[in-house]
Image (cartoon, rainbow, N blue to C red; front, side, top):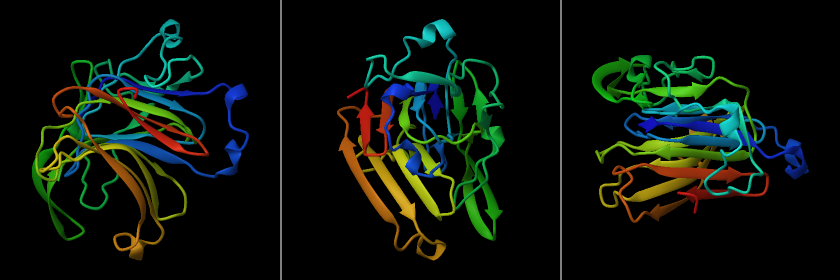
Length: 260
């Protein structure tokens, strides 16, 4: 996965929703690559409102913009000028090393996913998250692949607009490129998938968009609360870069592809 730009912003206070503070959520945004992976290469934009943290896995690329340029940095889906970029959450990965003030590349392994920092590197104005065939064991389970991930270190935020320019990995069984956030509360797990590019063998152009809630560990696989949709794109997501975005507020969530 490669993502060249990641940006974060918020709507000015005069345009905020009155009920903003009622939800006590927080979370992290991820781009992840494992036996589900992502390639992204140009701009990744994040325009947020309060409490979300971000995580990226696989290849992530981003580049930095000057303060003068920020005035023109607006979501592709809404260029009216009402959004403000949150620079502390935004990155374009245009340097020769990861900004460890913003990002953690030592993401704790979970389930079948093993993320290792050596699978994360910056090159050619891009952050690359790599998947490797490396047989290993964890908790007495045999696993065969490792990959890379990065997770934001800044305080969690709630609501906003998230946008990333991504190129999916070539189709391979079990591989999924993903851009998502999750919640940091006592619940077992909550998740918003801005996009999952699973490279479905039958439908390689299928894009998936999900929300998940896992109430209890014993019910994690059997009874999750889940809503989702998919869209068959007119192009293959592994052929070129496309912008995937999600606008999330207290009333609804809206997904965008290339600003539409």
